[in-house]
Length: 287
Image 1 (cartoon, one colour):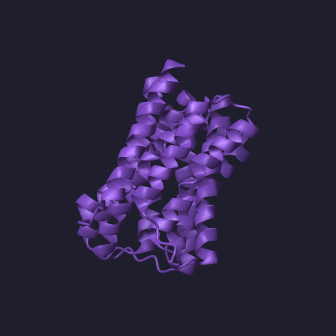
Image 2 (cartoon, one colour):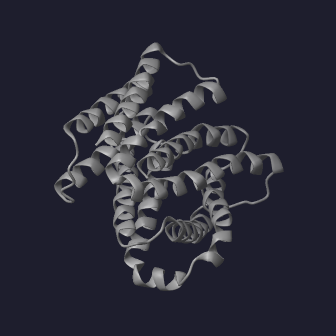
């Protein structure tokens, strides 16, 4: 059970990490931000749609736990809007660094609110991993914009709320598929309305643009599903820890896919993160 949970958490981290560089490729080819946002949830909805007929009493589950389903969907909206807008005001590396504080928030919540017993060695690994993330991203603090920082924090809190609420939902016996279905259907409707009213949502674009946007959209679909599966198996704290793989994959993806340069300290940071995650996996599996 634990091993499968770790695998799903790592898969989620890898796929989430690939979203950034593959989306950047689509933007460079001419894709717009509104289309990228809408298609992310539209594609995810299409992928999860075949599971609908196999969900028993789905609408009863939605009705009975509506506050949880809406809350986790709102968290997803905060995450998406915060990340995509904060980069307009501050450096991308600083945005990701602030966003990547969410595993720390989850850890604090787990200890203080849920009274979860977490090994001291694992707490230390959280800190070491975050230091590795700082080295990987190499953020620039030359331009600090309060609005940009606030939006990045909103995204981080959105990710935190999704993981915490997912844990509560799994404790209530709600499986990952209904959660996935509701989040994506709720968000595709929400973003269609918002983007149609406030932005230009033009679907007249070449097929190659669609195919490029399709890649990060598929990554998101299976990343979210993997995260939802991992949390009931290994808990919110350990899932959050293993999701620290996301920025490492993002940076490596930028190097190999976007031909960006990688500094020595970033390589050292990536090694620190990977070793920390392997250590956490070993320690938690032994206990």
